[in-house]
Image (cartoon, rainbow, N blue to C red):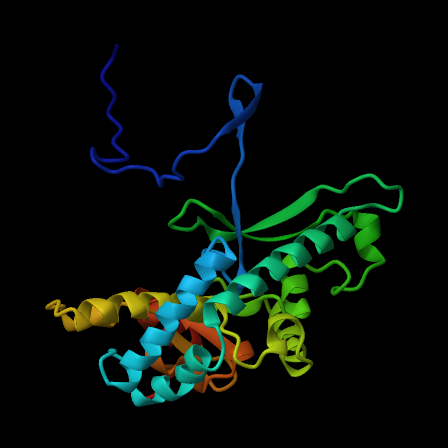
Length: 295
């Protein structure tokens, strides 16, 4: 073998990993097919990680304890956040509510997929997938908008809403909260539509918004992390301040006024207008979107 003179990837650098995936079949010699989960962009549905109503009841107990710690000043949270979150921890069974809403969201998603993927003839449409510029998340899921695949002739006779994504369907139903992450912001024509259906779902109390004390999925996950951190602090763990704040990590910008809020102040922005930004992307987002930090 002749020695090559080209160096591209130095030793120790690897391609992004998607983790283990089951092999479905092999189309030809260079095309194995796998099954891959999709994380739908710009939306967040209630969590079902409790796995059962019994598991959800355990979360209820944790959230009740978290509320006591917050009121006793033992949790690393601001007064503003305390006022925002305490009713959601005390006045409802937050774990059970989240789990049941998550089951409803899953059922609605299945219903709308079955409906929109079925052609008038009864045959099934394929799924159209539009992925993000950075296509995979840290769990190896494909980040994408998904919709029924229509022919050019069909699309020409449809409105933008009629051919919209399942992501938008979930927002319109109220079973998903808007969850736009920089830099994957919907396009010029899509963003106003996304905000419009999100505002309507909340105003008309659809889906999870029937209960004003519902938590968006991201807020529920924050509370789970906050419980675990506070439990360690109460037990006497010597935890660095930066780790104490690990329950919240993303900054939040108001898409109406371009104000950039600190992670713990996201509730200052109405839910449909929140743009979430990772700390490592803050400087880029300030320059790209002309954001104004709120002090």
